[in-house]
Image (tube, rainbow, N blue to C red):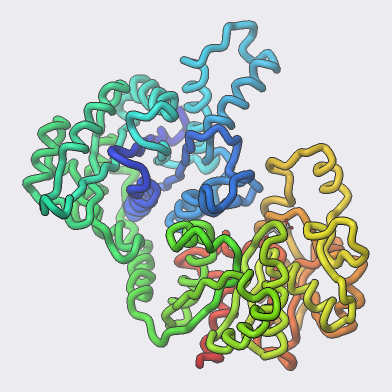
Length: 554
Ligand code: GLN
């Protein structure tokens, strides 16, 4: 038991996946914060990948990166944004990472010669990690979201961990089932049966829900709440309605209206002495929510990327942190964001060049991170166009590397400038690989081996970067293998590109920009600022970009 007698809330999903367990868990964390409690989150993904780093964004959505460099599911971004804190690698696990830990411990003789079994050793390793996550900040409550759906094979060992922890500490553990309540069009009535089956399925794993959150298109009415309460042996107040809303940030208030905070506190036996109404936190959150609704003029931002062909659904998942960061800065600047997704391949070839003129209608252009060779020439043409036409530009990671390549080609006369990633044998690799990374590549060590996590950078005074950050030392999260080649930085600077931040040893460019006299806003960063943007603390570079777009409004 930790010093604080930490409490644990397991969140599991009933009926189907994608009903919003992550968002419900984040909102639960928020309302507990409003009661003065410290909260941390753990996300469990049942897949065998050791982390999310090797997965394609069209497959699994964005790969989110923590301060300590762990590459994880996008839900971790939701948690950080809702909680307003930074999480650590203890807060994320997969079947792969847990098995790896158990196997490594076995190899290191940590089981002292015992036979190591799937049960109990795997669930016990899960519990150990959950407890560690609580200890990092010594929090009052840890919320653990178990990915997947009740009844599937993949997550049984995690449910078993919840069962064991609950039987060891019955007063400290509860489980919440987030379930789907369909309203079939032809029937025109909300149905509870699938949820009743999910309750049974949960009971088969030795757990029963202490609270059920019903996700549905409209509010769950009293009659249905009663039905669900009856079949789960719960009280009606334990059944919470979570209808579809325009904004996920409204959910905390919807939960508070149903007194979910008090129900959680009672069921977890949290002593009164620990509680306090944090009205300041609630007011700050609600003013953010109000600002998000009360927007002024619309600004049109084009996002140029390549993961767009799979349709809108995947799109928003693959770039969720960028989208959220843009929204926060728009609310902060009292403008309404309108995002336009442009496929960079459309700007390639002669026909593509003709389309560049179409970029004039946007107030700003953003090129986010990316990998590989697809659509690269299209992105470079877009950057040349916005640079020479004075359209605000914000480049992130690959969007910065390609800006350096474009400048080398078109302003420094290095016609064949490219990146190691595109053409490893080329002569003019303006973006290249550092020797440590080359070694990893040679060994085929691709997982968790990029430059990952938080690194400091030193910012030069009198630059855009300094104006935005108002600081000479900044700290940002990275996820990339390649760097702007230090051999070319003198030439780029001589020809007018400003390197306004570097790694502390002065070697690696971290931010590049054009001076205000030459361009209204042309700033590109090697790191991923979107991972640190928070609703109540929008990111300075996103703020600067949105402000420039606002000024440039057509
Ligand atoms: N592909 C580039 C690299 O690995 C950029 C990565 C990114 O945009 N996240 O360096």
